[in-house]
Amino acid sequence: MANHKSALKRIRSTEVKRVRNKYQHKSTRNAIRNFRALTNKKEAEKAFPIVAAMIDKLAKRNVIHDNKASNLKSGLQVFMNKL
Image 1: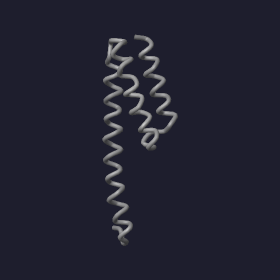
Image 2: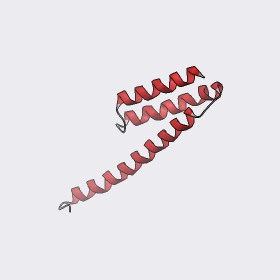
Image 3: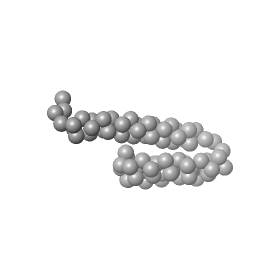
Image 4: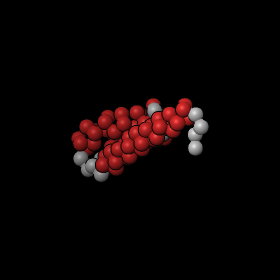
């Protein structure tokens, strides 16, 4: 167990950040899954900027790596172009 006030505070703040990151990452994964389920190109073109922004936010906050974000967005773009 932590012996210092600052260590106790670090434990609390780390838990808050962990829960927030988990929520945002799961929300983005669900958005990607729903995007891949789309069959209409117009709907996909409308939804792509929203999903891409979610992915970019995860990369900016270091929840996922920048290259993974680029890879995901590229794959979604290819999917949208094939519709």
